[in-house]
Image (cartoon, rainbow, N blue to C red; front, top):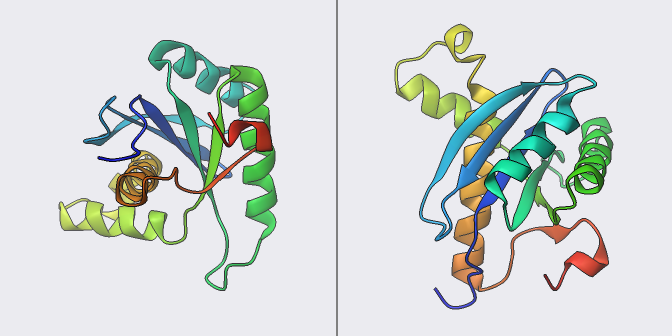
Length: 157
């Protein structure tokens, strides 16, 4: 595991209605679901409380870009939410390409026998698990943190 920074990470899948939250163990062996946070005026506060509880090394926030790698309206929303989270929690934030994480989460839930209707409450958590596990696996494979730091001063944390 050359270059892997030990520490808990929180994965955040930002949606318009709900936000999925996942966490990893300190050794980055496994990402697991934490909760689905309703997207409202209290969202940032709730996730900041989770940051205080889990004391993560960083937040890994999914950046929804289209299949051509271009920004969308959701991309700007996720960046703004990530910035608010970083400011409210004081935690380093990394933005990671989340293309297909929700699709992968839906496929995994369907494979486990859940319908799309019964998966609605957990699919955001599952998507957060997918993107967090991808970030961990990328860092373990390359020795460098996945994605990009929200602010340049976070790059060397």
